[in-house]
Length: 117
Image (cartoon, rainbow, N blue to C red; front, side, top):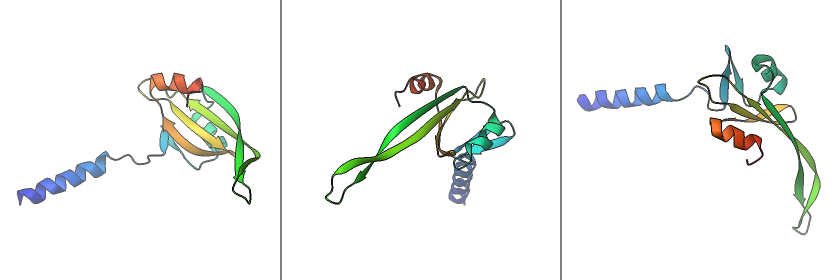
């Protein structure tokens, strides 16, 4: 009986300790999630504390297996400083959609803003 109780407690604690959304963060009373339009996130969270735009070359394969540049892709990195006691959040934006959300440490956020991703 004690082993069942112990197992129940372990499962209950592990389920309760998991985050509701691993790919989201809280802004006020709402959540910003991956897959949302960046305009909706800006309405929820306000203006980002830092914004970086990079144009990256996209490569494709030719028929004989070589790679070549086929175009460019614009990627934006929006950083939100969420205030005291909260880690900053960096959102990767492609085509106006949040594709990745990463919570940063205070020291990491400064390094990533300088481009050492």
